Image (cartoon, rainbow, N blue to C red; front, side, top):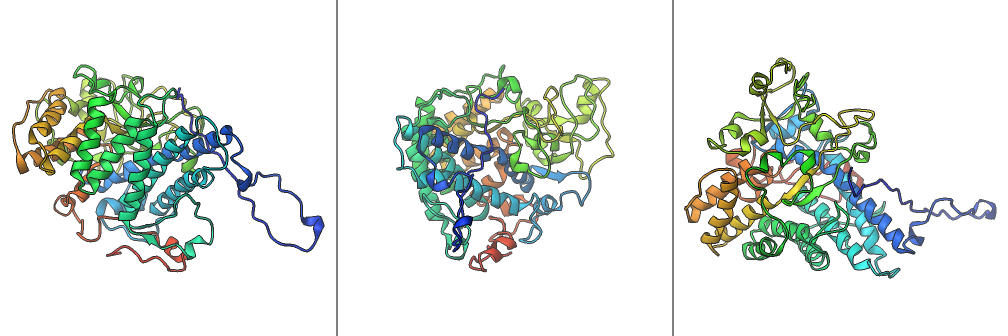
Length: 494
């Protein structure tokens, strides 16, 4: 059971139309958004509503992994979810991205940012003892959602401490990403300064989460000194550590959620059902079922079947060094698994682009409630930032920033040694490449590879079909541009 349950809250804005007849001037039964925020409870309810959109991120990390060279789209056929197939093949366009595609993702992130800005718009209305904490959590969430927007779309429309409401799209321009990043940095700096390393309620944002995300944001901008400073502060003063080699195989099991290595973990639950008509309403992690093998029967009773999306390539399988402890935790070799577990089976002819490998970190496990639809209600948390990632980001910042290859080697080797691999002693560019290789195998299946390749300028040489100057960002859905009165220019190349 999750300790912090993200719930869907609709805070209704009252639209008033002038009318000459008094008898129609009746007070609305819905609460006016301008008259909210009269108590701490109001702020807490709005904050939980802002947390709620974290659960939409399962689509983002799955799509990002498919966009990279780590996995293929898969699915039932070449026409199953064509908007994902197009992203896999780097032929996605601004058209036809509704109903689960990029337009849906764009809309989700703006709803998420709006929920944060709703709190910030009324941040001075009512005082209470825990207000600073509420605002710090809000600003982290706003930073996280804005970071998602700027990673995926570059320059994006933005307001600060004010909701974007209908009609505003005709007057708001796309904000240069440098300005978006500046706000993200301010929000995360505030959050890091005003939150504890350990919260009373599991799932709430911590100081470590803010520091880890701030370090990542700096790294995406090649601000290596700033990244190294905040990440090393987290390493030296935070409560996190790597799991040991003996503990690591349990990393992605449910009993090990929110463990000491987890810096920022998105909570999912199976206590509520869901439907394909409202993915943003889901409390469960839909991606885990979508990643699983079709028609799979596991004799051990551990893994569930799935829809065979997001299948690892032979290339990423070959990227693991012999003896790497992480291979078994990261990659499910279905043929080998069936050999090792007699009585297990799957339909090897079912599915598209099947490689025989599956994302073992995020596939459905048996034992959840399967309310309404087993594909939508999986209670498998997503580890957005792990301590191993923090160590590798710090190593990269120290190395690429010319600060200290010695410390960079130490952080890199901590991750390698935990995986039962020997230490490296390289320096300079060779060390940089070793860090890149380590990030790929350590974080495979977690949605970071595509943006790692983009931010380091390696995407065109690693991803088939990637066009430099175009595919670093995704197209703004054409419907959104049209709704702005064509005010917003499309991203280059689309």
